[in-house]
Amino acid sequence: MRAVPALAASIVLLGIAAASSAQESDPHLWLEEVQSPRALEWVGARNAESTQALTSLAQYRALQPAIKGVLDAPGRIPGVEMQGKWLYNFWRDPQHPRGLWRRTTLAEYRKAQPRWETVIDVDQLAAAEKENWVWGGAQCLEPAARRCLVSLTRGGGDAHVVREFDVPSRGFVRGGFSLPEAKGSLAWIDQNRVFVDTDFGPGSMTESGYPRVVKEWQRGTPLASAVTVFEGRESDTSASAWKDFTPGHEREFIIRRPTFFTNELFIREQGVLTKIAKPEDAEAYTIGDQLMIELRSDWQVGGKVHVQGSLLAIPYRAFQRGARNFDVLFTPTASSSLQSVVALRDAIILVEMDNVLGKVEELVHRQGQWRRRTVATPSFGNVAVAALDGARSNQYLLTVGGFLQPTTLMLARAGSDEHTPLKSMPAYFDTTPYKVEQWRALADDGTAVPYFVVMRKDVVFDGSNPTLLYEGRPGFVFFTPKRR
Image (cartoon, rainbow, N blue to C red; front, side):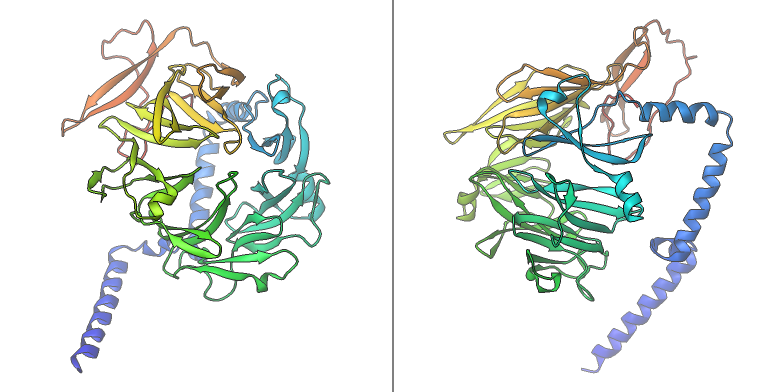
């Protein structure tokens, strides 16, 4: 019995010795304490050195205003998201450095010069409240989107202040939901209730510095009276909650993230939490009556092995009753991968990547069967899709572009290949003399790695052409064809 304390003491001593050895072998280990004053001071000094070195270059005086001119150009495409019947956009320019949260209608947005309504002028708000406010986003209560939870940060940090905002009156709600500055968030449940995850006091945050406790907060009551609905562990990364407001399929979700790459998903029905039985490294969510699971590793289930990178679907209620006969909506190949899944009212859009070229697939679930078709898109290489109002509409925004094609935003609809151009970036330079080709490099293990070459049409391959190699290194991401 006495050997156990002795062994524990030995382990502790070994741990101390190992830590001491690591400190001695890596004199910069203290920099991993990212919030320590010493580390922050060191980083600030290095940033100052870098700024001085870069701004003293002769090219800086010419490049800086040219690049800033492109970034501030009025011809930029204003990205939008639909809340209620309005399209909202957050816009910064030289006259509004902190930004405008503004809105317009789809009919106006189609015009070359839409008429925008300012909802919040962050510059005016910061001046009036004498705060260094940086916009952090807004979440509006569906479907009317008259009340929104507006997030602001002081100086752009991780900690947020969240305040309830009334859009029709253009003002913050007196006595409304208001969350003090902390790492955390609010999420609507209904008009009088929200989920809240924040710093509730000692023991309520994870070792990573994010909330581990989720509560339900009733309007008109103090934050201290909010009722706990979930607690994670202090060793976790974070915990949070939200609600899906899709008509007929409203569901409340709570997610626990033990690590950055793993999660546990719970569905809350009538106050009861039910854990979704899935691999911890898989992402799960619902679209209508379907449970979707994106795999990050192989999964043996239901007598089958589904490979890493697959997208699986199954009726949610059947899954909860024990069914595991998944429909496979996407299976990766050596050259293809799934980039995004976009839910519309009556369809699902998959954005796939094949040899670093974008492809759009449309899936419709009818009478227990999935029907698939490829959506015709311009073959520029880079493709992105975003729903306008996925819960209530089949319209979506399609963005395409390439090395020699300016980014163009189009309006599309499920079931059709017709795309209506809405906005396009300026050309900035004459592309006539240039062409793009895709080549492949052969790795040591025989893998063919695709890459793009942008060159003059009259180039002569004599080995004397100056070449700019962009991101020619191993990494965790790939780059699609677009202007940079």
